[in-house]
Length: 487
Image 1 (cartoon, rainbow, N blue to C red):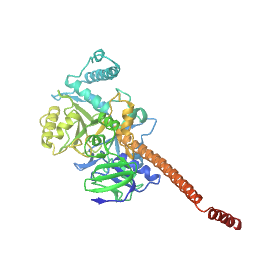
Image 2: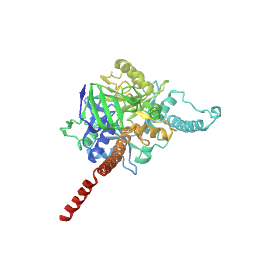
Image 3: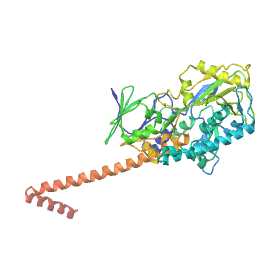
Image 4: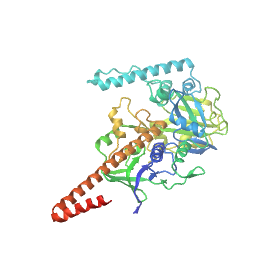
């Protein structure tokens, strides 16, 4: 078993939370840190991939919440780094809804359906709230409208799986603004993390070459006590630290990947179990030519199907990368898991059938397909966290609360911005500052113990002298007084 020297802080996970936490520590003089990342790159669920000769984002792809009174910190980072972005307007999608025969639903029909869906969603929120307050579940009113038709199911999907801000005040849009920008930069969204890392890790030519970052290092066990934390990895290495920041996803926390010795307390594990894990899958399709509508208000289009979420939400990449001839279809949750379990060829067949329903049988076959698998990735186990709408505030507090010397961070620990990149960024900063505060308190306690120990030792020494020959004691005392007088 290989062993390594002890350091101040080990950070497990090099996503945006882990990197921002490490930056806070470094800025405050804590430089003996070690970042252990299970995958082969920095970024976590921010991950680029070269597809069809352009850089596409497999995970987080938008900077959400721009244009408000307060600046979004991630938008500020993007501006400082010169990251290329494109404005995206989801609201137009509801007026580009295709049925199975390729006809677009009239805007009036789509608008009315959307309005009814919003009203139904608000009613559902109130019903959920009533159900929590009602002593008798039978007293809770039933929903008057449940989506049934293909267009109702499609509208319900885009409303709940994409927009939501129009149903419930979302902190991101209230605080930072309602505009959203798609990252369209060949360096990738992850470039922001590399720019942050440059401030405290050694880098060269855009690569991190600092031995305080270890990639392909899978943490499997955390053994914690009052004295520190011992970290064991899959390759047999052992690392020791005064503190650990656990910057892994809520899905990983719910999985058996990392074991704790002793086990985490029940209040912690129960809170982790209650947080829902969402799966969000962007499937990329490359074509020899484009056959879909482009131009203003045409970036997104919707397919109405009898099965909710069945290849519903489409986007072309022409605004981000003109001439790329790439379409993206987004699946979520159950559909994501279903597609992850089948072959890419079967997924391509299903997607092409949907596209031919919308645009006719003569469209060309896709030349390439890319299907990310976040659910089956044991280092992620999903895409982002989703708290129940009426979650107990104590549940959120318990998820982010430290256990001894282990601190927890990530977008799932952000009460106001869970599920967003800026949520993960701000959570990392908060965790770094919380750890510094604990370190300060521990240092003060240790100093007090040292002073107390010295005082006790001195008292014991005097007590020992008192049991000795009184003449020797007196001689020592007078001798010291004499030297002081001479000096």
